[in-house]
Structure formats: structure tokens, C-alpha cells
Length: 38
Image 1 (tube, rainbow, N blue to C red):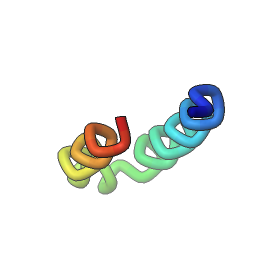
Image 2: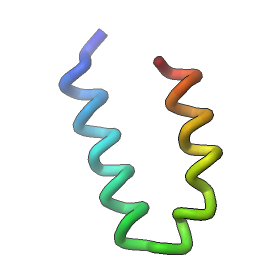
Image 3: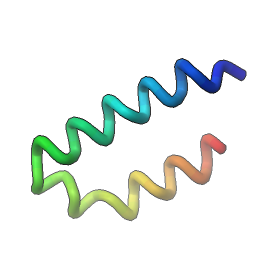
Image 4: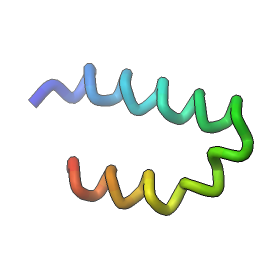
């Protein structure tokens, strides 16, 4: 498991979400995906 790579991808996703505020509405779905991948 490549934790560093996963963190990098997660950081990119979070950055995109905060750039596009409307994406925040999908945050519950995003958390569900994180739980699935964890």
C-alpha cells in the first residue's frame, strides 16, 4: 500500500473541492469513498 501516493491524490482532490465550492455538497459521498478505500 502506497500511503504517500494515496495522500497525494487525496490532497489533490481536497484542493479541487475547495477551489470549486459547489463540490462541497458532494462531501458526504467523498467521505463514503474514503471509508471504502481505507
